[in-house]
Length: 158
Image 1 (cartoon, one colour):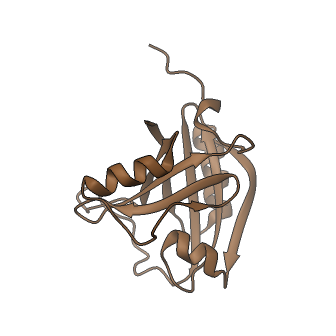
Image 2 (cartoon, one colour):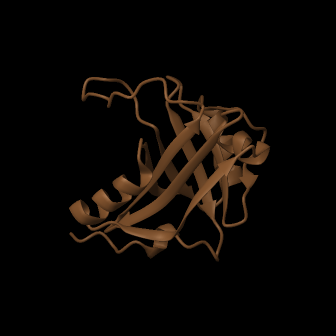
């Protein structure tokens, strides 16, 4: 069962500056510690980017998580921000209670995945896939000890 969108991700040029901005502008809080990787075939397989290197952070505000990445390898293709009329987003992530079942169901609906199965990272099981137009979507299932489960977000006020 899909429970809802877990987070939206954005690529930034200056992670520290953007964390500070989102804290001040919108009240986002850093969840856990910022993270980084380079020369890590395991992470490369998760993000489906060979020889990648990046810093990242998960932030939270209200009913939303925002994940930020600052890639240093490969270099971004453009340093210009997207305009409202540009196509696409970095990715969004849906939270699942049974990721293996959702992987099979979504594959049958036309999603494509570069990995043969979800990858157990420890705090989450995750897999990136593409919708029929090629937009990137992450499917994840959080472990009980994960610092950012969907259930930690406050309920929607109606």
